Length: 293
Image 1: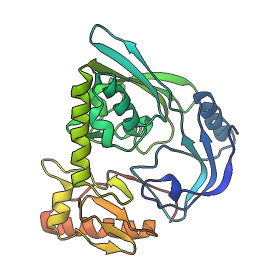
Image 2: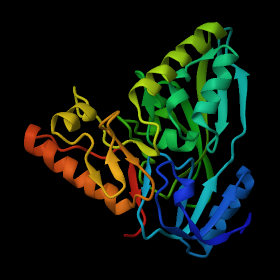
Image 3: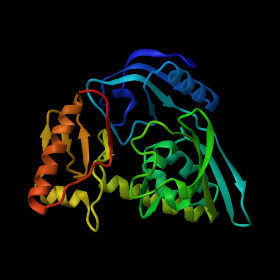
């Protein structure tokens, strides 16, 4: 298996919420060739695989993850002209979304500025159709390269990806693995791109907690906001163990140090019950919950 595999690696340090039990096996990959070889070998040995990016938008249960966790650090990117005022940006799936947003905005390429505050990788962002500030991955994505269930590398156009609100054909599935993605960016003044990015960053600092969190816990229901519903249901500041429904933003659940996954899931159940009782709305998780209890 390519890379240095570890056994019983705690996953809490590898997630933004700082929660999670151990992985049976854990390996970091930095090159696409090693990524593909590692996946193919694990499949040949019938070892279950879980691909981990930046560890945002995910809650790992306290029992950890069986099989092999592959932490994807494949982060190469490039830019190629696509007409007088547009370009195609290609990025490997382990590349940082905010890192790319910052880099290309400063070079005068617009389209990703909204991603400056979304702490994930390109692979995770594509799988969940990540978005913020009225922008999302589906707006600019052109195609993806994947490793399919048969071990072949294929290119899929945007129209084949079943994009929906915070969803795609890849969400919650393991048989197709995103290797890279291509996006169309448009030329703009660097100062304008940077100002837009700074505005988004300032908004995030004003409205979101700084404690470890998983990002937005629930999807916004149609024509409403999960945070508003949670707050109106009286759940803001609610605690279970060291986990809390954030006082800064009710759709963020934070870890005050030593929280367990079961604490967070207890809050999830309570919040859902109270919102449904008050508003008749069943909140749907935006995050992915993985691993054993």
